[in-house]
Each structure stands twice: as structure tokens, then as C-alpha cells.
Length: 154
Image 1 (cartoon, helix red, strand yellow):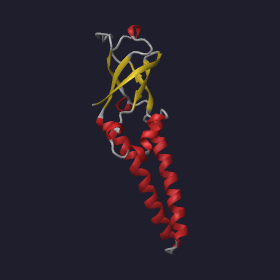
Image 2: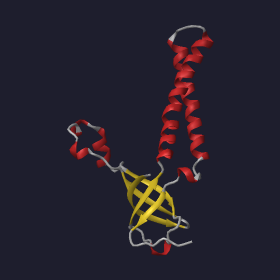
Image 3: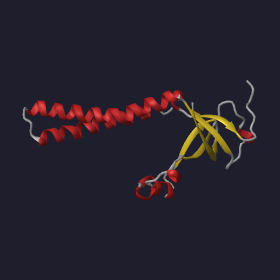
Image 4: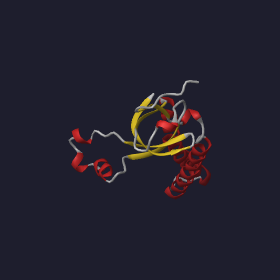
């Protein structure tokens, strides 16, 4: 389980909207002067907004601004990363090779066009997978701990 600290921004029926601050080791890095990560953190790009189902927690005692700890399964992160990164790369390679084979030449034009088409098709597949698995409980973060809040015993 990967754990992350955050704070409650909004409370909906059955879920919380939690802002998490991406952890960065920029303070100890020697290359921070020439790195874009430090600039992004300063501009606020390090904050993520997540919808977290309440699960077994009592919503009545949670307030906006309360610190919470959320978690997500490692397998969800690994599978999501594998799909998001390897599928477009595979689309580029297969599209380029397919276009070169269809055209019958080794010219760069057909290979580049095939790579662009393969990337676009793979990106659509990644987007479709994201929509299809948006409500899948295996990919949802869970509320692990909320300060001063008791779990509801079922």
C-alpha cells in the first residue's frame, strides 16, 4: 500500500475530495537550480486532487481542511503506469513498422506517419481504459486515517 498525506478540500455524499502534495527531494538535490521539477513545485503543480470514497469512516466528524492519510494499492500504480507508458510506445513501434511494411520502402515519411497514427490509436486506448476503470474499486484510493475521526463499526 502506497500512503500519502493530504487535506480535505470538499465533502460529497460518500466521498471526500483530498488535495495531496507531491513529495519531492528537491531540497537535497544538487541539480535543483537547473531542474524543471523545482519550478513546477513552486508554481503549485505538485498538488493533486483526488476523490476518495469514505469507506468505513463517519462523515459527520470530518471537516474541510482536516488532515487525512490515503492509500492506493501498489498493483494499481504498477498496472496504470504500465498501460500509460508502454501502450503508446508499443503503438509508435507497431505503427512505424506497419507503415514501412505496407509502403514497401524504408523512407522516413511513411514510418513517421505510421508512428503518429500508432501513437494516436494507443492514446485513445489508454483514455478508454481510464474511463472504463474510473469507478473500479481496485484503482481507487482509500481513506486510511483521518485525524480525530472514528471508523464506523459494521
